[in-house]
Image (cartoon, rainbow, N blue to C red; front, side, top):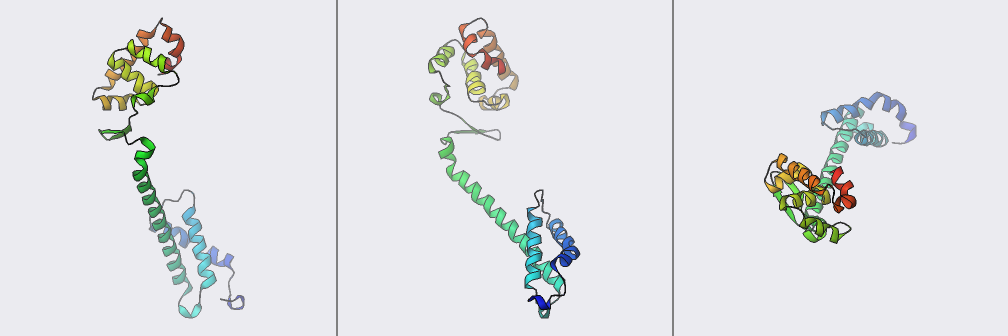
Length: 191
Protein backbone atom coordinates (compact mmCIF):
# COMPACT_ATOMS: atom_id res chain seq x y z
CA UNK A 1 0.00 0.00 0.00
CA UNK A 2 1.58 3.30 -0.98
CA UNK A 3 1.86 6.28 1.37
CA UNK A 4 -0.81 8.36 -0.41
CA UNK A 5 -3.54 5.77 0.28
CA UNK A 6 -2.80 5.41 4.00
CA UNK A 7 -5.14 7.34 6.23
CA UNK A 8 -3.57 6.20 9.55
CA UNK A 9 0.01 6.18 10.80
CA UNK A 10 1.42 3.02 12.30
CA UNK A 11 1.48 4.68 15.73
CA UNK A 12 -2.28 5.18 15.51
CA UNK A 13 -2.83 1.61 14.32
CA UNK A 14 -0.57 0.34 17.10
CA UNK A 15 -2.37 2.25 19.85
CA UNK A 16 -5.74 0.94 18.60
CA UNK A 17 -4.62 -2.68 18.10
CA UNK A 18 -1.96 -3.43 20.73
CA UNK A 19 -4.54 -5.34 22.78
CA UNK A 20 -4.92 -7.81 19.90
CA UNK A 21 -1.35 -8.97 20.49
CA UNK A 22 -2.01 -9.52 24.19
CA UNK A 23 -5.32 -11.23 23.38
CA UNK A 24 -3.66 -13.84 21.16
CA UNK A 25 -0.78 -14.37 23.56
CA UNK A 26 -3.34 -15.17 26.28
CA UNK A 27 -5.65 -17.14 24.00
CA UNK A 28 -2.79 -19.35 22.82
CA UNK A 29 -1.73 -19.78 26.47
CA UNK A 30 1.77 -18.47 25.85
CA UNK A 31 4.11 -17.68 28.73
CA UNK A 32 6.12 -14.69 27.60
CA UNK A 33 8.42 -13.46 30.39
CA UNK A 34 10.96 -11.99 27.94
CA UNK A 35 8.25 -10.56 25.67
CA UNK A 36 9.61 -12.44 22.66
CA UNK A 37 6.09 -13.34 21.56
CA UNK A 38 4.93 -9.79 22.13
CA UNK A 39 7.68 -8.61 19.78
CA UNK A 40 6.62 -11.24 17.25
CA UNK A 41 3.03 -9.97 17.48
CA UNK A 42 4.20 -6.39 17.12
CA UNK A 43 6.15 -7.32 14.01
CA UNK A 44 3.06 -9.09 12.63
CA UNK A 45 0.99 -5.96 13.27
CA UNK A 46 3.54 -3.82 11.45
CA UNK A 47 3.70 -6.32 8.58
CA UNK A 48 -0.12 -6.30 8.35
CA UNK A 49 -0.08 -2.49 8.31
CA UNK A 50 2.50 -2.49 5.51
CA UNK A 51 0.79 -5.11 3.32
CA UNK A 52 -2.91 -4.45 3.94
CA UNK A 53 -5.04 -4.06 0.82
CA UNK A 54 -8.48 -2.50 1.55
CA UNK A 55 -10.26 -4.16 -1.37
CA UNK A 56 -9.44 -7.66 0.06
CA UNK A 57 -11.37 -7.34 3.34
CA UNK A 58 -11.53 -5.56 6.69
CA UNK A 59 -8.27 -4.41 8.26
CA UNK A 60 -9.05 -5.92 11.68
CA UNK A 61 -9.60 -9.39 10.19
CA UNK A 62 -6.24 -9.16 8.45
CA UNK A 63 -4.54 -8.01 11.68
CA UNK A 64 -6.09 -10.92 13.61
CA UNK A 65 -5.04 -13.43 10.99
CA UNK A 66 -1.42 -12.30 10.75
CA UNK A 67 -0.87 -11.88 14.48
CA UNK A 68 -2.39 -15.26 15.37
CA UNK A 69 -0.53 -17.18 12.67
CA UNK A 70 2.76 -15.45 13.32
CA UNK A 71 2.55 -16.44 17.01
CA UNK A 72 1.62 -20.02 16.10
CA UNK A 73 4.59 -20.19 13.72
CA UNK A 74 6.87 -18.98 16.52
CA UNK A 75 5.52 -21.69 18.86
CA UNK A 76 6.15 -24.34 16.21
CA UNK A 77 9.65 -23.05 15.58
CA UNK A 78 10.51 -23.15 19.30
CA UNK A 79 9.03 -26.64 19.70
CA UNK A 80 11.07 -27.88 16.74
CA UNK A 81 14.22 -26.35 18.23
CA UNK A 82 13.54 -28.09 21.54
CA UNK A 83 13.01 -31.43 19.76
CA UNK A 84 16.25 -31.03 17.82
CA UNK A 85 18.14 -30.17 21.00
CA UNK A 86 16.70 -33.19 22.85
CA UNK A 87 17.60 -35.43 19.91
CA UNK A 88 21.12 -34.01 19.85
CA UNK A 89 21.48 -34.63 23.60
CA UNK A 90 20.22 -38.18 23.23
CA UNK A 91 22.48 -39.00 20.30
CA UNK A 92 25.55 -37.45 21.93
CA UNK A 93 24.88 -38.55 25.52
CA UNK A 94 27.43 -41.34 25.29
CA UNK A 95 30.05 -38.95 23.94
CA UNK A 96 29.62 -36.45 26.77
CA UNK A 97 29.18 -38.97 29.59
CA UNK A 98 31.06 -42.04 28.38
CA UNK A 99 27.67 -43.78 28.14
CA UNK A 100 28.06 -45.10 31.67
CA UNK A 101 24.71 -44.81 33.45
CA UNK A 102 22.98 -46.33 36.40
CA UNK A 103 19.29 -45.69 36.04
CA UNK A 104 17.07 -46.46 38.94
CA UNK A 105 14.38 -44.91 41.03
CA UNK A 106 13.87 -42.13 38.52
CA UNK A 107 17.51 -41.01 38.35
CA UNK A 108 19.87 -40.75 35.44
CA UNK A 109 23.08 -40.46 37.38
CA UNK A 110 26.36 -40.67 35.52
CA UNK A 111 28.85 -42.99 37.13
CA UNK A 112 32.51 -42.37 36.65
CA UNK A 113 34.99 -45.16 36.17
CA UNK A 114 37.31 -45.87 39.09
CA UNK A 115 40.38 -44.55 37.31
CA UNK A 116 38.58 -41.26 36.58
CA UNK A 117 37.50 -40.53 40.13
CA UNK A 118 40.89 -39.93 41.61
CA UNK A 119 41.46 -36.26 42.07
CA UNK A 120 44.88 -34.62 41.90
CA UNK A 121 46.80 -37.17 44.01
CA UNK A 122 46.24 -40.84 43.11
CA UNK A 123 48.58 -42.10 45.81
CA UNK A 124 46.77 -40.16 48.55
CA UNK A 125 43.35 -41.55 47.59
CA UNK A 126 44.73 -45.06 47.24
CA UNK A 127 46.24 -44.91 50.74
CA UNK A 128 43.02 -43.51 52.15
CA UNK A 129 40.97 -46.29 50.54
CA UNK A 130 43.07 -48.88 52.40
CA UNK A 131 42.06 -47.36 55.76
CA UNK A 132 38.32 -47.27 55.06
CA UNK A 133 35.60 -49.87 54.88
CA UNK A 134 33.90 -50.51 51.57
CA UNK A 135 30.91 -48.30 52.45
CA UNK A 136 33.10 -45.55 53.85
CA UNK A 137 35.08 -45.51 50.59
CA UNK A 138 31.81 -45.35 48.64
CA UNK A 139 30.92 -42.22 50.60
CA UNK A 140 34.29 -40.61 49.82
CA UNK A 141 34.13 -41.68 46.18
CA UNK A 142 30.58 -40.56 45.49
CA UNK A 143 30.03 -37.69 47.91
CA UNK A 144 33.48 -36.05 47.94
CA UNK A 145 35.04 -36.93 44.61
CA UNK A 146 31.96 -37.13 42.38
CA UNK A 147 29.91 -34.53 44.26
CA UNK A 148 26.73 -36.62 44.35
CA UNK A 149 23.97 -35.95 46.86
CA UNK A 150 23.35 -38.26 49.82
CA UNK A 151 19.94 -39.09 48.36
CA UNK A 152 21.45 -40.08 45.00
CA UNK A 153 24.06 -42.27 46.71
CA UNK A 154 21.35 -43.96 48.77
CA UNK A 155 19.35 -44.70 45.63
CA UNK A 156 22.41 -46.01 43.79
CA UNK A 157 23.44 -48.26 46.67
CA UNK A 158 19.85 -49.28 47.44
CA UNK A 159 20.09 -48.16 51.06
CA UNK A 160 18.70 -45.45 53.32
CA UNK A 161 19.80 -41.84 53.43
CA UNK A 162 20.63 -42.31 57.13
CA UNK A 163 22.99 -45.18 56.26
CA UNK A 164 24.88 -43.01 53.79
CA UNK A 165 25.12 -40.20 56.36
CA UNK A 166 26.51 -42.65 58.89
CA UNK A 167 29.21 -43.71 56.40
CA UNK A 168 30.28 -40.07 56.23
CA UNK A 169 30.30 -39.71 60.03
CA UNK A 170 32.48 -42.82 60.32
CA UNK A 171 34.93 -41.46 57.74
CA UNK A 172 35.24 -38.18 59.67
CA UNK A 173 35.70 -40.03 62.94
CA UNK A 174 38.30 -42.40 61.46
CA UNK A 175 40.35 -39.54 60.01
CA UNK A 176 40.61 -37.49 63.21
CA UNK A 177 44.22 -37.29 64.33
CA UNK A 178 45.66 -38.94 61.20
CA UNK A 179 47.95 -37.61 58.52
CA UNK A 180 45.00 -37.75 56.12
CA UNK A 181 43.22 -35.14 58.23
CA UNK A 182 46.00 -32.65 57.50
CA UNK A 183 45.92 -33.33 53.77
CA UNK A 184 42.22 -33.68 53.00
CA UNK A 185 40.47 -32.62 56.22
CA UNK A 186 39.05 -29.47 54.64
CA UNK A 187 37.33 -31.60 52.00
CA UNK A 188 35.90 -34.08 54.51
CA UNK A 189 34.70 -31.36 56.88
CA UNK A 190 32.90 -29.53 54.06
CA UNK A 191 31.14 -32.79 53.19
